[in-house]
Length: 77
Image (cartoon, rainbow, N blue to C red):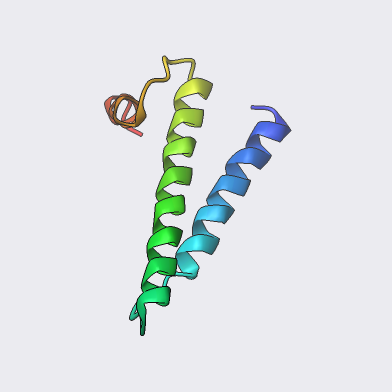
């Protein structure tokens, strides 16, 4: 795998971890709640991007999120 692609994987993983660390475990108000929900949403979107990247890099057909996760599951990943 080329260096740029590896860097992209690393960036996505770092982004996910950073956003999950911003989640308020006990939000004190509506703003903190919505901020937490947003951080979780963008983390999930980044994780689905990672799944699609991996499916593509394995030379398999990329589909919707469910297809990609099922493809990786069949491969034992």
